[in-house]
Image 1 (cartoon, rainbow, N blue to C red):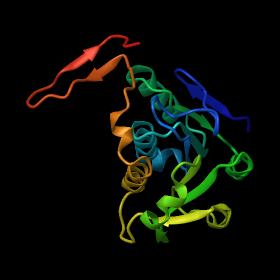
Image 2 (cartoon, rainbow, N blue to C red):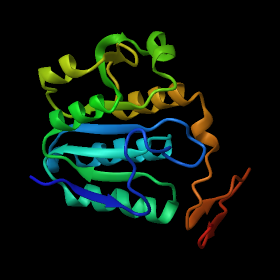
Image 3 (cartoon, rainbow, N blue to C red):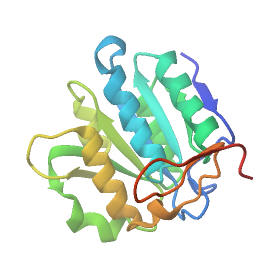
Image 4 (spheres, rainbow, N blue to C red):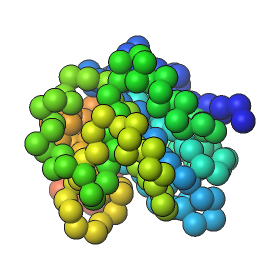
Length: 199
């Protein structure tokens, strides 16, 4: 099936630019084995976390789910940044192509090695992060350069991705200005939201 791309502002490829202004590496997050009826909410949260925490691109694999693609694209349109999202019918082909371009492939799994111990070998490189839904195919382990565990305890793939990205970017992702049409102003008590283009 042909790939479908959804991007509010700019298509980004590994090795061609940062995810958001000020981010030095290109990070793609691949959601493996998405099931439309069962995984919609968690898959959406995986991509929300990816976008907010410095990734450049989200790639949906498994069931083609327009509601997820359009929903994330709408978030990017309103809240800013350069995050792109698309569907890819053949995840192994996508991973192989990115590896050929020089990206490092990381599979997040509770059965992997401790992620913080490998972080020095990952920083400064373009990476592809595999995040599974349901039963992860064996090829995800064998095609990856690193199988990494964010704690060997049961928890969410969303929290694993968030912790990994925060360590990878060393907290710099939290200072990015997304320049969105909607912005939340930090407030000690109450809510302050600014609406309107912020170019």
